Amino acid sequence: MRLLILSFVTACFWMVGCGGSSLDDANSPQVTYAPRPALAVDGVCSDTATLDRWLAINEFQMTYFMEYLDSAGRRSRAAHRQDLHRLNEVHIHSTLQAAPDCAAVLQERIADATAYTLQGLQAYANGQRDDVREIVSESRRRFNAIQPEFNELLQRLERQYRERGR
Image (cartoon, rainbow, N blue to C red; front, top):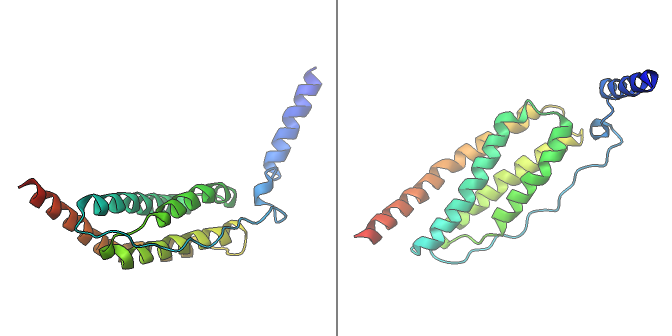
């Protein structure tokens, strides 16, 4: 019985030590995603509820992606493979939400930044890119470039709520 347990434990250590996880193997299936859906514009920014809803969804998306980028350099290719599914779900859900008129251009920029991040991480997870730091750096640059325009819409929303409360 001890020999059986020892053999099992040895086999487990061997698999872990020798790359027993097939997610990092060159023969693993490639991670692929369909292109993002077309973006829609519906509603006006003067409608406080419409603007609030759109900002909340996109603030969550941008925060989620930026927090992921904070830890991307510490993750293995296998971890990225698994995490990409959730990132893609967040991206698709957010891009399916129609933007109010004043946020149409910003929605395009956010969708482009998240799509760039997904495509870069997908290429890294699939072994087509070697340095995740380049992907993280460019993704951060894109999200940071969006932030001032996003903040302007947040300020607009705050003003609308203040004016509504009068």
